[in-house]
Image 1: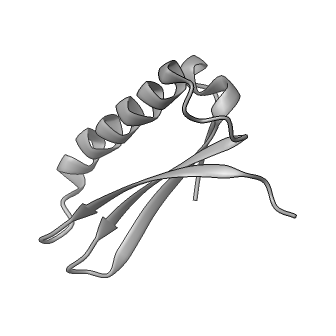
Image 2: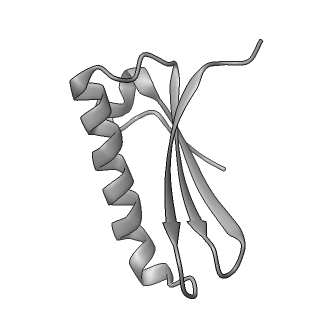
Length: 77
């Protein structure tokens, strides 16, 4: 059986703009931090996904939930 995880998805319309993506990741990281503070996530990892609907692409980053608040658990895919 695979590792348990939580996922946070954000759907964006329009063309991909790299200048805006940093802000999108910050937004998702704030949501993930909120989950950890509220103790809603008890899974071993959390996956953040930005879906660019017009281009049918998904950008994803994976974090170890236990050290997310330390900023050391990121693994990009």
